[in-house]
Amino acid sequence: MPEPDAQTTPPPAPETIIRVRGLVTRFDTHTVHDGLDLDVRRGEIIGVVGGSGTGKSVLLRAIVGLLNPAEGQIEVLGQSVRDTSDDDYRRLRRRWGVMFQDGALFSSLTVRQNVEAPMREQLHLDDALRETLAGIKVRMVGLPENAQVKYPSELSGGMRKRAGFARSIALDPEIVFLDEPTAGLDPIGAAAFDTLIKQLQAALGLTVFLVTHDLDSLHAICDRVAVLADKRVLAVGTMRDMLDVDHPWVKEYFHGPRARAATASARPDGRA
Ligand SMILES: Nc1ncnc2c1ncn2[C@@H]1O[C@H](COP(=O)(O)OP(=O)(O)OP(=O)(O)O)[C@@H](O)[C@H]1O
Image (cartoon, rainbow, N blue to C red):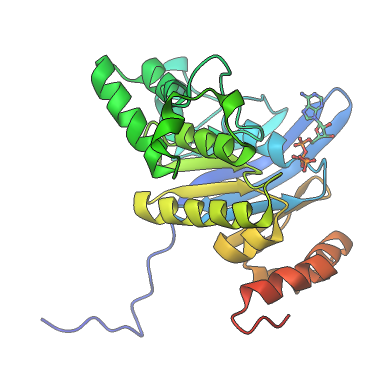
């Protein structure tokens, strides 16, 4: 058989798994997004950054169908999130998991019961199988065995975040949306959480939509970065691409002292 010609065979184009076009979101007279476009590729970790209040969380909520935009198209896995029947939306929703900023755990349920909650809602499993599967998810995020029966109030902030992550992967999703997962963690805890995201993304073939302010996370685990500014996605690309973007916020963020420190810590020689 002839060898494929590496020079003439282009790599397959990456599959777009999330497509947002012309998104407009408003709260009364306050326009948060005005004509926002974004493509997310299957299998990537995309970091969504932007100043406070630029609409990162609102974008996340719009994509997963929790917020009704004024205008625009949102497709996830080839299906419209907006113009769809309740049944189709429910089926689509099973294919992603969300970890909200505060973990959003049910305080009256144990960690394992929290992970079981989406399984109860979406799957028809007998109790023993559901408990076993939920227990596996809890172990996958690195929580100790005894955390399974603890209540959220008995956990540290970092453990609560891991529990939220376990719940987001309860239904074996293709996409996970993580809203500031390392916020409030100390640098060592944040780095450990980044490693966990990267490992599970690789092991489970996940696409990760990561809202973050954390430059270390962007360096450590993101394939691409999308910058929200001026009510839209101002730039998308690698961290290297961001250095060439001529916009005051982008310059300040990616060239400022914190950026230099994060670059240095990401380099093996420690130099910025
Ligand atoms: N339910 C709501 N009702 C009214 N305004 C809202 C609502 N949710 C968000 N907003 C407003 O939309 C804007 C964008 O909010 P969002 O939470 O998406 O910002 P963000 O970029 O995630 O900010 P941060 O980095 O501080 O978390 C803010 O001005 C916020 O006050």
